[in-house]
Amino acid sequence: MKIIKEITKWILALIFVAAGINHFLNPAFYLKIMPPILPFHLFLVYLSGVFEMIFGGLLLVPRFSRSAAWALIALLIAVFPANIYMAMNPQIFSQYSETALFLRLPLQFVLIGWAFWYTKR
Image (cartoon, rainbow, N blue to C red; front, side, top):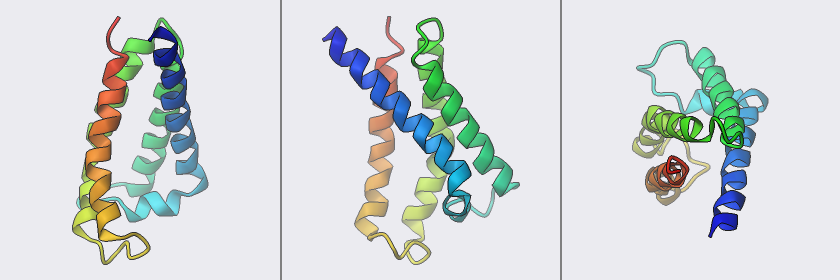
């Protein structure tokens, strides 16, 4: 079980690092999903990308792994409004089915649970 936990930790870290990099390669996508109520959209897109890369990388550093997992959970909660915004405004995101937009919501909880696994010693 320990080897599975280590392999899946690497997978989760790579997912977040890749997603963080994508914030810089494709900021238009992230700008589009920003709820209008939030200020400084581009700044927040880049900031969340930086945090995804940092926390994803730190997940692989044993000394920081637990803290990084908690930080990823906080980040996933912080960006959850963007997923809600997408689900509630399917007309803006016509390239995705409404089903896919709503499936993103529970996926966030799966990612939170996955990160939570690494908060345990």
